[in-house]
Image 1 (tube, rainbow, N blue to C red):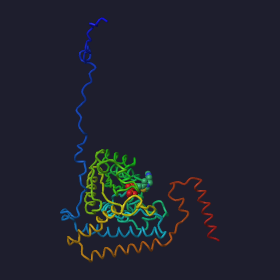
Image 2: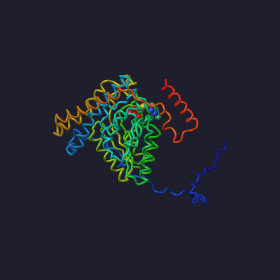
Image 3: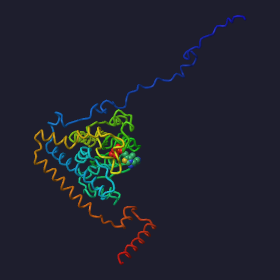
Image 4: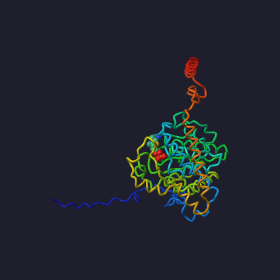
Amino acid sequence: MKKSTMTVRPVEPAQDLPGAAAYRPAPPPAWKPRTDPAPLLPDSEPHRVLGTGAAARLDAGLMRRLYAELVRGRRYNTQATALTKQGRLAVYPSSTGQEACEVAAALVLEERDWLFPSYRDTLAAVVRGLDPVEALTLLRGDWHTGYDPREHRIAPLCTPLATQLPHAVGLAHAARLKGDDVVALAMVGDGGTSEGDFHEALNFAAVWRAPVVFLVQNNGFAISVPLAKQTAAPSLAHKAVGYGMPGRLVDGNDAAAVHEVLAEAVARARRGGGPTLVEAVTYRMDAHTNADDATRYRGDAEVEAWRAHDPVQLMERELTERGMLDEDAVREAREAAETMAAELRERMNADPVLDPMDLFAHVYAEKTAQLREQEALLRAELDAEDER
Ligand SMILES: Cc1ncc(C[n+]2csc(CCOP(=O)(O)OP(=O)(O)O)c2C)c(N)n1
């Protein structure tokens, strides 16, 4: 076969073709991050105050108040849990082990601010001033909320995960538009951070610089689901960076540290600096609720390791060592807690007096014809019952 003498011409680069320059895309404008992510990143270790030199700057009055509320809070948790066993309370999601977060969150707010708790945060509501029995009406099954949210500026204890977060953002944003000096603090669990509402709330809050503080209590579990199966993020506080707000990590059992970090975040929100995401690393010492058996998904060793880092003892030790708390003050705090528990027992042991007609209250601003008809029927039945 005759050998081909044809030479293959290399393909000319496009720029050499006539007119090619016209099609060359313009280089993109120089890219830079829209915000410097460095100041938004959480520290590599949770912030601690107790047991460190930093405790020297503590305000004695505030620390004693935190301590007294921690003692009362622990007693509230054990008493409410006991009431579930006595059939006086349907369900109680205990915050034993998490009292530092509950107490600090409540005390850091001004009266004009708003607290948005989840179902685990009854204690925060009580520390903010809500009547201890009213705080349990939902969990006793009497009422959906059981208290007037406006009275103490405490939104209803929220059972659907993370739905309280967009509520908090909406309220805070509206307040800002109206020129009201209000900060909203919303509490959520580690499991709640996987909800769409968490994402939407944080995104909206950051874009509009809403005066909100998001407090995530990372207590290790969402019922039986451990954090490792909940997120692949380096920490929950790191999630803040993606929204453009600062993320802060704090030891959630150190009430002084939680108060300090939250106070900074509240001040930032108040001066128009926008929202902060705070992750408090803590541990749920009790089961998820009285309907859960925690021994099925976690070992005793883990629980015991956390018992050695107990929020009430941490504070008591620090204040005693610094001479800020004497035996009398400890006894006083314990006695006040016992008095509260005795009153709670007594009041919860009395059967609630509920009016069946309340079924029709608070459903519609203007009742429908059908509802009015049903209301009249029930009224007639109840009157007939009374006459019998
Ligand atoms: C939208 C929604 N999905 C599922 C549930 C059921 N549920 C109740 S508590 C819970 C776990 C929540 O864990 P976490 O957010 O970590 O809070 P914790 O109970 O530990 O305080 C789940 C899945 C719910 N209440 N709401």
